[in-house]
Amino acid sequence: MFGQSPLRYTSPISLTYCVDPDWMPYEAIRVGKHVGLSADYIHLIGKYANIQFNLIETSSWDETLALLKSGDCQVASMLNPSPERESYLAFSKPFFNAENVFVTNSDIPFVAGYGSLQSKRLGLVRNYRHQEYVERYYPELNVTLVESESAGLLALSANEIDVLVGSMLSVARHIQKFGLNELKVSGLAKPHDLLSIGLIKSQTQHLERINTAIDLITESQHVDLFRRWNQMTVVDNTDYRFFYISGAALLLFIALMAWRNFYIVRFNRTLVVKNQLLEDLKVELVEKNTQLEFLSNRDALTSLYNRYFMVQRCEQEIARLNRFKENACLVLYDIDHFKQINDTHGHSLGDKILCELAQVVAREIRQIDIMARWGGEEFLILCPQTDLVAAKALSQRIQSALAKYSFDIIGKLTCSFGIAQYADNESFISWFDRADDAMYRGKKQGRNAIVTANSAPDIVE
Ligand SMILES: Nc1nc2c(ncn2[C@@H]2O[C@H](COP(=O)(O)OP(=O)(O)OP(=O)(O)O)[C@@H](O)[C@H]2O)c(=O)[nH]1
Image 1 (tube, rainbow, N blue to C red):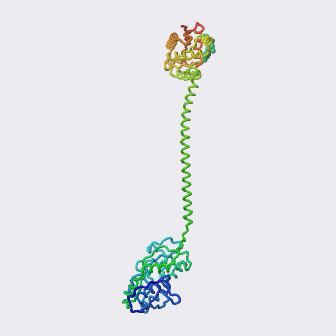
Image 2: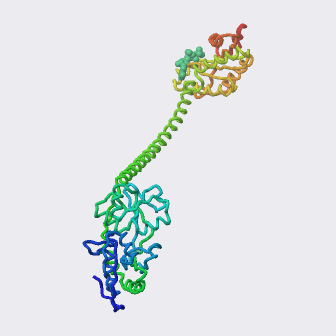
Image 3: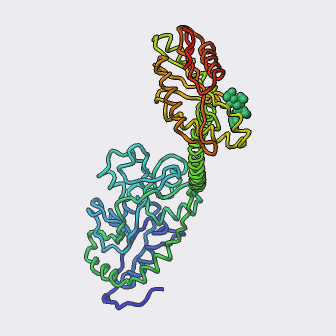
C-alpha cells in the first residue's frame, strides 16, 4: 500500500518507541503487536527516514508517559503537543488532524463547550492532553478521571459521569464495538488534535529526519490511511415521531383553518346576499304599508278619505274643540238626482262624474279642511276653525264652481248642502245627524240648497 520514496538518509538508525496500548483506531497493542493508524504511520515514516522503530510494550498510557519521561522509550508514536509534554519531548510536524468530541447519553441534546458543563460530571482520560487543558482553562469543572476512552464510555453508560471528552474516531469505534447505542456525540471539544511524533529531548537531532519523512507522505496516502481506520457508522437515534406528529398536527391545523376560512367567506357571501334581500323586502314592506295605509284611509273610486278615516278624524277634532273651545263646521253635500245620471248614461259614467265632482270641490276647500266620500253620492267636509258664516260661504263657493263647471256628457249638476256648527260637548253622531238633517231638508225644499243647522231654527237659503 505504501509507494516508494527517495531515501535521503542512507545511514540507518534505531529508536525505541511506545504507544497508547488502548486507543483504537489511533493505536493499540494487540498480542504484543502495535496496531492502528499510528502503526501504519510509524511504518511509513520509518521507511522514508530509514529508522528502525522498536516497540516497547506498555499496558497503559500512564506507563507509556513514564517510560518516555525516564528515556526508556525514545519515541511516542502519536500524541498531541502540550506545554507539560514539551518539557521532556520535542514534537514533529503534525501528520494527522482529528476532532475531539463531547459524548453524552441521548437525553442531553447538545453541548456547546466546556463553559456549559458547570453542573455536569465531566469524564477525562487521565494524562490525555484534555486533562491538562481543562485544569488550566476550566479548573472549576467537576472532573472525573478515567483510565481510557473505553473505560470512560462504560462509565458514561453506567451514569457515573454525564459527559466524556474523547477523540472522534476512537469513541465512535468504541460505541460501535460495545453496542452503546444510547450514547451519542453531542458537540465538538477543544482543543483540536494535531497528532505528532514525540522524541525525547536527548534524541532531538533525529527530528529533521522524521519531519522530512512526514513531508514525503502524499495526500492520497493520508486519505488511504484515514479510510482504512475510520470505519465509523453514523447511528441516528433521533426520535422523529415527535416531528412527524407535530408536522401532521400542523398540517391538520392549517387544513382546518383553510376549511374554516372557506366556509366563513362563503357564509359571508350568503349573508351579504340575504341582507340585500332583506333590505329589498324592507323597502317593499314600507311601500306596501304606505299603500295599505292609503288604501285603508281612502275611497277606492275618488281617492278622497273614506268614512272610516273621517269618523276618526272628526273624533280627534271634537276632543280638540272641547279643549280649546274653537268653532268647527261639518258640510254634508249630496248630488241631486244622481240616480237619473246612472239610469240614463250608465253606472260607469256615474263613477266618472263622482270623480270629477271630487276634483271640482277639492279645488274650493282650504288646506286644513278635510273632505271624505261618506257613501254613494254623499260627501262630508270637516272645516276646523270655521263658524256657520264661513261654512256657508264655502258651500256657496262650491255651488258657484259647480254652476260654472261642465261635466262630461251630462253638463251641469247641482248638490244639496247641510251645514252644522259644533255645539259644546256634542257627540259626533249628534253633530253629523244635524248636518244630515239639514241636508235632507234642503232636498225636500227643492234641492241645490244650502241649509244650516244649529240651535237656532234652521235657515233655508
Ligand atoms: N255610478 C255610481 N252610482 C252610485 C254610487 N253610489 C251610489 N250610486 C247611485 O246613486 C244613486 C242615488 O240615488 P238616490 O238615493 O235616489 O238619490 P238621487 O237620485 O241623487 O236623488 P236625490 O238625492 O234625492 O237628489 C243611486 O242610483 C245609486 O245607485 C257609485 O259609487 N257610483
